[in-house]
Image (cartoon, rainbow, N blue to C red; front, side, top):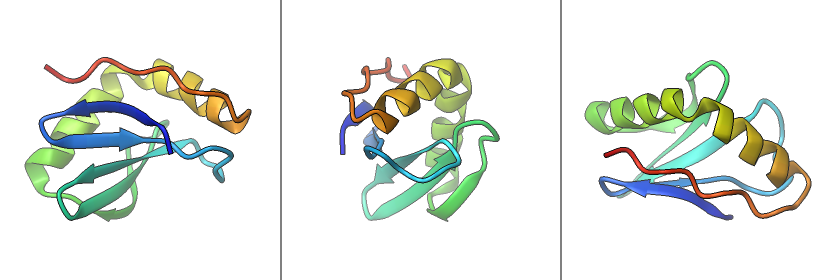
Length: 86
């Protein structure tokens, strides 16, 4: 499962050949969420409020790049790293 980005202790990953809709996995300590890239909604899991806000802000900034990485992962190709939130 490739790591797409890391920031403020949050790790963003995508799996190869995942099910639709386009999404990514975020980890923060013992917390894990799955975020829909198009709708910015939590599909599954739980995150602390502030950490979730950071992830959603980052997602909004990099939505196009995330969708490109999603397409790469669907083709079993290495996704590109995406700049962290600063």
